[in-house]
Image (tube, rainbow, N blue to C red):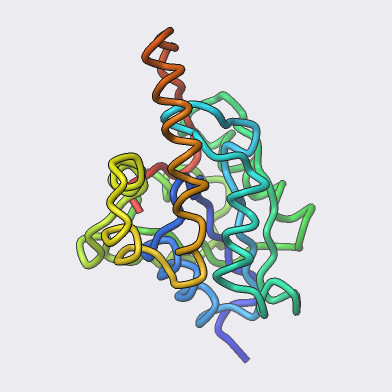
Length: 197
């Protein structure tokens, strides 16, 4: 029996890397089940949010195949709400998690302080954070590595099950870079825990 019944991990995974994996593994070590909300699920095709939710989910399943099949790891899309980092966002996150998997009793995150500010309406929640300084990567850095074609660095920062995705990810990023060169789009704002993990 684990200390918590249902843990929550929230991320955009716009470049799934070993930091994300470490957060999910920590949650799995503490919780009977873990729900991973794939944030900004309604966003793709930009340099900030390049990869569609279906591809991000597929990559999570490639890293955790057994756990996602046996139900210990629940993967669920989460669209942006558009309200910013406020308690209404936290209520929306927990409501979405509850609808998909039940009551969350633990939030596991990558030392992202703003995540704790979302849940003042839920005083019984427990929090576990991982020290991000121990992992020298974030999704922004990983996207640059992919776009630059540095496959060796990509392999260093990703699980073995993701190595075969490199050409596909690079193709998506190159296509977006070309499109944005020709017609710069306004920056998109994302409200899920951002790239820092």
